Amino acid sequence: MSHGPTEPNMAVELKGATLWAAAIVLAMANFIAVLNMTIANVTVPNMVGSLGAGTSQGTWIITAYAVAEAITVPLTGWISARFGSVRVFVLCVLFFGVFSLMCGISTSLSMLLAMRVLQGITGGPLLALSQALLLKIFPKEKAMQATGLWAMTTLLAPVVGPVLGGWLADQYSWRWAFFINVPQALTFGAVAWLLLRRTESPTQRKPIDVIGLVLLVVWVGSLQIMLDEGKDKDWFASTEIVTLAVIAIVGFLAFLIWELTEEQPIVDLRIFRHRGYSMCMVALVLSFGAFFAANVLTPLWLQYNMGYTATWAGVVVAWSGVLQVFFSPVSAKLADRVDPRFLIFTGIFWLGVVMIWRSVATTDMGFMEITIPMFCMGVGFPLYFVPLTGVAMGAVDEREMTSASGLMAFVRTIAGAFGTSLVTTAWEDNTKFEHAQLADIIGNHLPALPGIGAPIETLRSMFDMLVTNQALLLATNNVMLDIGIVFIIAAFTICGAPKPTRTVDPTSVGH
Image (cartoon, rainbow, N blue to C red; front, top):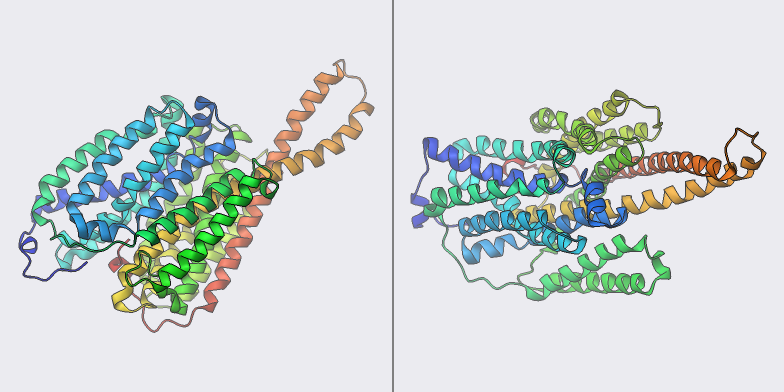
């Protein structure tokens, strides 16, 4: 949404301490929205235990937020134009705090999931508007500083999330992972309104693609529920799963047809006519889905298999983000000097190699043996993600960049949500398979074991615990290997992109 220089709101300029106060508020609002993508990862076992739910159902806590957030990202432009970007931002921050409070006081899994959906709906616009408003209030010559501040909070939040969530769960309660959002959201909302209301943009009455929005919600929601429920209902042996699959497929096809023929689509799919953009999106879906899957699986494995507390599981996961902060500016500079496709390939391939390295874990591994591969992963993510953004945006027409950026955010979030569901399904299925295999081997030899002064039932119980522990480890290694292969496939997909004739500075692209 662009406005001419004669618009009254553009005459209001923030300077000095006021400018930086507004910038910090915007960046921190983005921080808490990104933080809530990962803060729940390590607390899922605590949540499901407290609410009397199963481990598989616990992944809904993560995916409900991610899917709801993804669906609202394409809507942000229309909502901002209709009601004003500052007004939308402030209301979303305030309601984010309200729904965080409701998450914290939830008494059942269904209530928690409903509040997580509402939390995600208000979190999506925060991701999109925080950077847009930062770039709006900063002078052009200081745009890099504004984007640097925003990028720092975007990169630090996933690092802080697992550690903070784990510590709060261990020291207090998983509910505090949501309660801490409340004072921050109320404060940021109030301060943002005081500082930014004079910079509000004029509103426009723009039509909304209602049918496109409904179809989007239908096919994404059906697919996500199918992925979450499938493992518990024996997949396509269940009528419910078959029905959901049909709805998802028909809804997706209808969505494609409608969006490609609608004059003002909610998601501009025509952008995919650019081969460079399309190949970048394929690489992004595979790599980001795999990356998010690995980050979800790791704390589950550490807590259920290795005996880690939520705090220490969070510390391990956090190490994967440490080098991201340092390598992001390095990657941006390298993208100007070498073919960015080479950087993208190297970054994703490196992540694949590290995941294969992680697929040979043992139950005897110490903290450092687990942490070092996690630490090394931090090199790969910025090495591919920063130039990928530049190549993707450079492949589209200039007038399409806003839509392309929003679609990229949507694809990234959806990939993370689907990756979460798929990896937990694969992990549980692999665990059952490995348990059955090991149980057969040990069961055949158990009667022949010499007496050790214990009843046979006690022996069976003891060996079942051993089998379960080893089955979890083998399943984790199998899934880690699969994730590594997905990364390597993703690396080669970028080879299908043409050599970019131009790239866009990633720091100039909206979220």
